[in-house]
Amino acid sequence: MKGQLVGQFLVYVFAVVIMGVVLVMGYQFIAKIRADENSGIAVQFRSSLENDIQLVKKEYGSAYNREYFLSKDIDELCIADKKRGNPLLCSSCPLSNDYPLVVDSLSSNASSNVFLFGKLSLERTMRLDDVDIGCCDFECFDVKDGSLNLRLEGYGDIARVVGQ
Image (tube, rainbow, N blue to C red; front, side, top):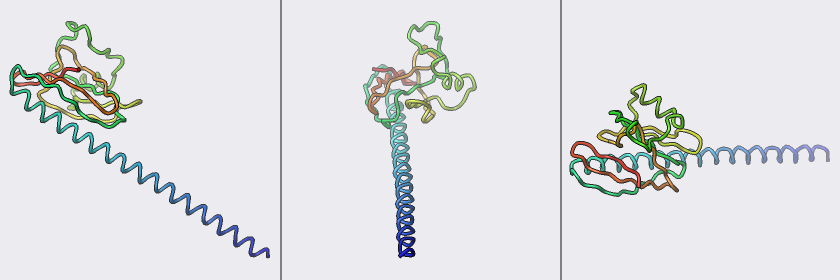
């Protein structure tokens, strides 16, 4: 009788261990799939924005309103302008203290000029060429429920990005 109880106990412990392993592996698998999906969305966003910039920049005086889709984890997109306008002439430039990573990237001449911010941290960076944002060093745009609305204006050799 006593041996039977020990045997049942070991079966229960073994079953709990197997269930725990299955749950942990399942969670890791789902997290990996979600990360891959977010990476794919970011690549698609970059490709769409690059294509639109190349199209719009050639058409001097043209302007297009575009909607881009990002991961729902992204709350804000910031674009830094390497050419650096004169932020003293602008009244609506973002505060440098609010975006230390963007300011550090500008001051260190890093290659990235697009920053995707999540709720708590920087999620991704990328580089886009032929982009102008006006007179500010950088400009940030809100992403609402994974949707980003931008206005692209053609200036012949560059495309100006303006929020809507």
